[in-house]
Length: 74
Image 1: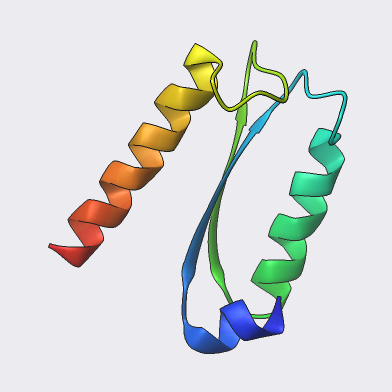
Image 2 (image 1 turned 135 degrees about the horizontal axis):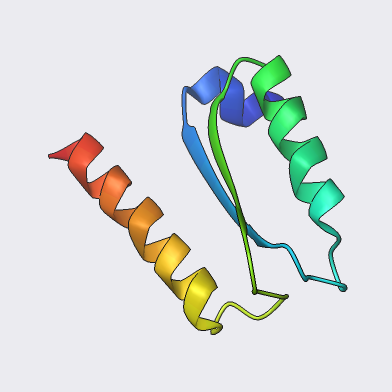
């Protein structure tokens, strides 16, 4: 967490609300820890998505986050 914040990285987290493998609370705690350390964090909880990164709603969230990073680097 400290390394990410110190390096000035922007972090995007997309987490399925119905993820029963890694509970959404874990993503929220990571978001809060990163923000407390000074990192810029975007956290999106995706309705109707679980744990798999191949679920359409999570794929859409990951593409949106990637597009935002692309625009930051352009």
